[in-house]
Length: 367
Image (tube, rainbow, N blue to C red):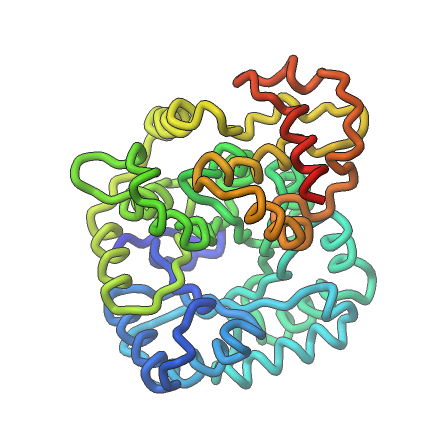
């Protein structure tokens, strides 16, 4: 197993982490706990969860597994500032998670699901979640206060520069990293731990192996290439995987055993591959982010990639749009596609000469 230092914390963590969001809940508690222990026996020492995961069973599964782990481990869990909006609520949430997990303390506690600036401001308000987490830290209930973000790179950068956290959890994978990389690189340069969630695009990459074969080298699969990317990048501390079988654990661990760090030049080659192979897809360069109507065009174009990469129909795009506005890349964006005045400034700046105006019209039709 490849191990990396988590930022400035001094903790040596496995490059592969176990994300507790995808347990097979049709299996027994004992079977899922055994999977956790197996991962630990393979060298994985970072285990992430949250209240509510897997029909609210994830923390309890970990608690069962932690009773008899074969090796040393770190535990990470989370709390939303929108739910725990006072210091008192935040402290109570930490204590409840500690009880369920059966540990003396939580190594990494995330201010969870920060999707827009207002969420971070809510967490940091006087008497709010962050204040409660600081108190837990003083009492030895938390080692490190960290943050889980679904924001764009520049917004992540602002939070990192605030200097209130020790690490960050971001949605990063081989397809979207050009759009997320500013936050990743800034965090790495400033000495933060960086955990990559959804390294397989939430399962999209394994189910589209043929379409994504251009990412591979030699006889590897697209899934293996995607894991190799996030595991090997020196800027990324942990690739957080949701495991359901021992075979999935073995594959990730074998990649970590052989992982060689990607150089800056190699990362650029991958970015060029993604762009060259998806000449109708947005690479997230951000040059079009200057709309006079306040439309977050890079975000709209990133979601539109789903049509080209995974060949989704208009009906599928429309059906998922509500979730994208609530949880995904369009969360917190003020301008809508219907606000477009067809001034053409974005298309003039687009490095790929994409028909942005026509795509925004499609968004407007999707609702």
